[in-house]
Length: 342
Image (cartoon, rainbow, N blue to C red):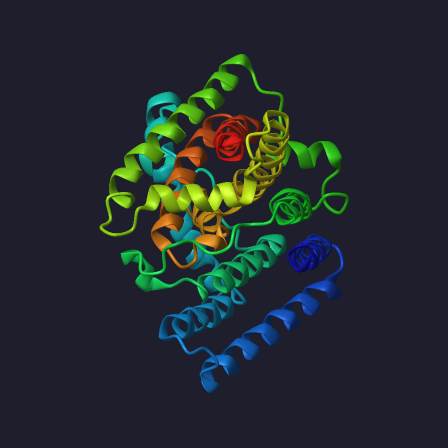
């Protein structure tokens, strides 16, 4: 429930960011909130509230980056970094010259990431930095050597619904300004909720296959770590969350529940709301970090982030619905196998 309350607060803040376009007083209210957060975080750094040097460095980075976005020159600088980065990762650097006879420089800068003059983008970046930093402070950098395996307690199904599912969908629609700067139809279009063509359905199914191949290749590294037995521990973690004792019907229901909640919620936020505004890589990084259950083993966060980049590239050429098919399908199959677990 606490996660859902936090998501609701952030959703309201996102809507206020859109409302500030028309109501100037809201701009000063949000700026005042940002300054308050900066001062609060700076006080935590000053008194050394975190025992971890890594966590303190993350907090200091949050202070600096949040301060930077308050200034127009800072937002221009961030945009100048994110725009060409996305131009390369999204393959516009290739598709522009080949398909549209554009110069590669024009192709890279065709779609501006993080518009410096947009107040909703400023508000969104503040939320992004704060949320990302909050989760990053809990990451154990020493976990690259897997010292903290086995995994912690499994995620509760109620959390998957209120946070990964309903919470992220609510945040996404608020992030694009539903009923403030966009009506229902334009919000759906902005988030990429479109009826997929049969070709796009095929791409979605291909993403399911890719996900299993990717997991297999990644496991050649993670599961080979001496003394860890990652395969057994990850299996035990997931079966602890989803186990039904071999009940086929219950396994299918739980698999559908997880597939829809996590697949739709995460894709709507990552590919629908974040990616068009900040780019493929920042959206994928957030997607990885939001898997907070892996904070003690950041290698698994990196695994999710790289996987998410590929899904982001697919979203670039299709829509969010297509990546939902891939995400939901992969989650359904893996969750069913863990839940049934006869």
